[in-house]
Length: 359
Image 1 (cartoon, helix red, strand yellow):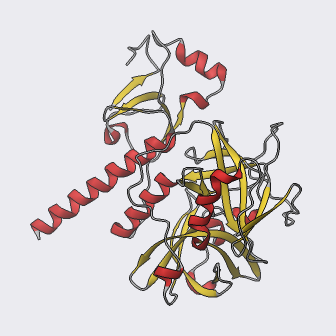
Image 2: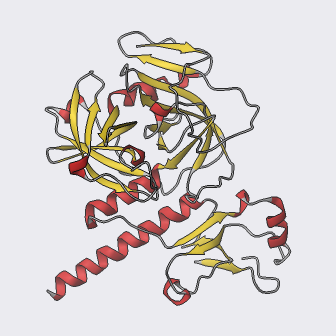
Image 3: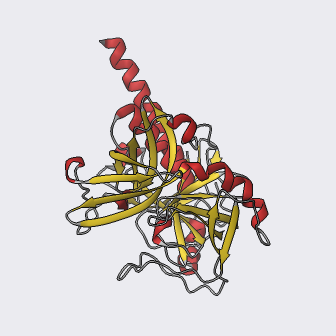
């Protein structure tokens, strides 16, 4: 691992689509997770009808295969508790035994008065609306409040055929964050229609604690939250985190590693080292940092270490810049997190092997 210390002197450089230009959104008073003053045009709102032939306009043809590939895997979920009704979209990602695993947003089960508590399974009722307009009863399997993801499971006859999984295996270590067109997918909670919204991935800083999030210029509605974000190459990029004129999504490489860790350890992984990518910092902060080095630095600026001493995290301190990890240049927090989660999982595998051998 290659890092720089910013505290000293100069450091070394180390199916028909019906398109509406002005969609009617569900009311959502008081909710504004993020905002944007961008002058970029709003994306088109698309209702997908799988019974009709394709009829995309302009740039949409390149997304057609991506859309058809996953539309049976995208569901809507409705949770009721304490007289409240919460809803999200979700994606079928796996079949484990008799259960079908659906990745969605933790917003579905989070209590409205707190950011750190979810409803217990016996206090909440979850219904999952499928592409064939049938409904299945869901159970909460996993919930990660930091990354705002949850796994809901259902038991549905013939699900391996009728509900194909968008697999999270063999993902790349990280995806490029270069600006490019993307699509957000979801399912309308009321009409059960499959929803598609075209947008654009942009490199932009956010003010939320979860620095792994990526920004899309995509004017979506609440129905999309928890649903997948994909590109024209049929790649599953992430899970929609919040909505407004910008849509935040959690990169799938982070979500997949959290889920794999949970499958093995039945607990949620927690990384205690937090940072920001240098290219997302304000210009005055970058200028101050650059003055401490012979050449402009790159990588991840460590801005928080949670409940851990410097000695227990390899000597890393707040203010350090990590430019490389295992020889790979770092350029995003999602990449940094994914690599650390891989190390954490490998360390747990080694620990479990030692315990078994000693037993």
